[in-house]
Amino acid sequence: MKATSIWISKFRSVLDNGRKHSVVVDLPPENNGDDMGPTALELTLMSLAGCITTIFAVVAEKRKLKYEALRLDLEAEKGEKTIEKCKGVLTVKTDAGERDVEIVLKLTMDICPVGALFEKAGVKPEIEIKIEKP
Image 1: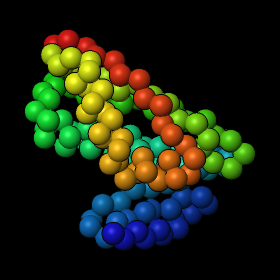
Image 2 (image 1 turned 90 degrees about the vertical axis):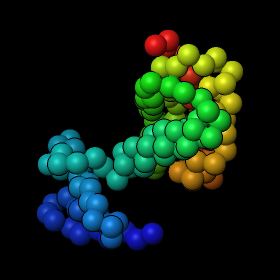
Image 3 (image 1 turned 60 degrees about the horizontal axis):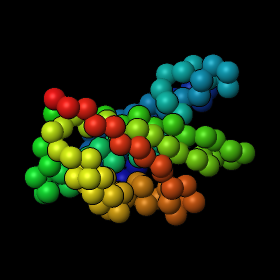
Image 4 (image 1 turned 135 degrees about the horizontal axis):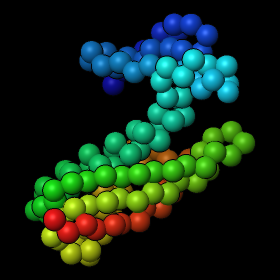
């Protein structure tokens, strides 16, 4: 893996992964930024959400759990320096039972690499499951 950050102006930078994918980070207006992208800290929360849904899809496929839609809404509380708490709701549109979804989520959280970083930082995401029937 690679990452490059190129400063553009004020508080805006372009991040690149070396595989032709880029993201702009910036600060919001209340912090004198131009709000041209998420902050780097917001990007970490976005990365966690993306990692959880990606790994959930991998685990669900292996366990043959079928679903029509998957959405994770996360909220984080920032302390003095960084994120201190993280909670969210995973909404799954499926005919599967709640226990089956719980197992897939538990296995997901056991192997989610971004989730592991959060846990090593002392932030264990609390995720509630909401099942919608198709």
